[in-house]
Image 1 (cartoon, rainbow, N blue to C red):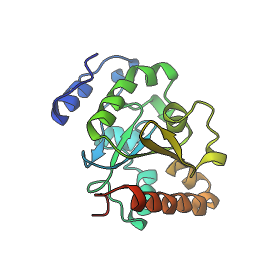
Image 2: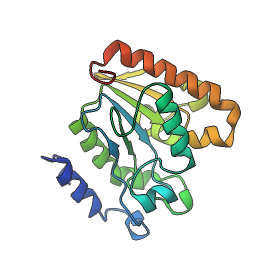
Image 3: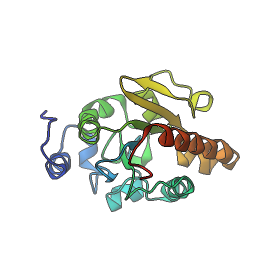
Image 4: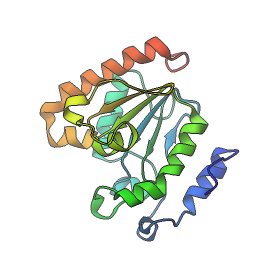
Length: 194
């Protein structure tokens, strides 16, 4: 697969015509991502849910609304100073976890996005994204909010907003992680809060 693209439009078009795995058969929309293509901070989830599949944008359901509130609390905005993407670009049926082979077929799209954006920080939302991007044996409840270094990238696993909705007692932990993220942005990013 060609993973070097000269423009976002080219990447978007290639993604939208992808038929590498069975998820293409049930999708309404390919959910490539949303945000600032020059963002220093990139958020990565596992895959689109029903609302995302219908609207073609990541994190637009109840979990997305919670994510937006937490982003806003630390002066981040999905349309201005961050970029949000997913491991898989098509919705797994019944919102099940994306299978390892589906992740494998789709991961090159995400790698192309990371190469084009060149973020300084990647935030993995939830266990699946963190296990794929940071380390396979991640313990999300124990290691959330911690920094991991990979090459020149700083990475942090966070609780998935849907997990926080299922267990509201986790909200203070999730919010603390966003405060930790804000500190790091202030420390190493030049344009995010510019």
